Image (cartoon, rainbow, N blue to C red):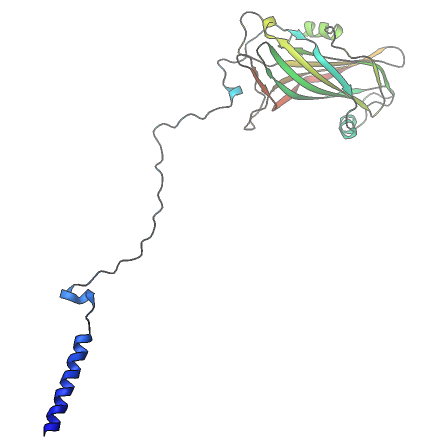
Length: 266
């Protein structure tokens, strides 16, 4: 009987020790259940869109001018410096490709590439490369190449006078250009702002005139002439050429030339 009582006492003591060692979870204490939070998800932040009045797009400096190009009296300038060289063969081949419209004589063609253009404090400047190629079947002898710069387009009689009697120092020394060959003229041309009058326009579209005269087999004179309008190529690829501003000093590498009319051959 005593053994039974001792066994029952030991069993109760063991259960009490297990109960004391057991700890209830904190989240059930006082009937409180801690909420389970969902993982935070980052929401992208979108900047507000301004719809009231957008700031105007800043245009390139050469487009910001106070007024359109005004009419000015034609001012003529000869090159400040001229160098003659032999152009690359592929450029000459492209220029002289095809058959000349008149057989058994020289036939000169032009290719104009402006290098830089703009203004400084005193002048409007244009740097050019003019390639002259002989597309004819016989040599062009005694070739005299003239280049000069105009502030605006003169009337027909004035242009003819300039071609007959170009400015001093505008003509190169005579050379011979064989069939399929050519010469390149590197020149810097400058117009004085002071020569354009007291009311200086805001901008101009200068014109480069090129003229080549040579001696034919019968002793008469052959001739090729052309004129090119020079301007700044819009940075966004728009049509046409922008004029050169005169109110501020700036030089541009992105320049182009547009042929005016058709080249004249004689």
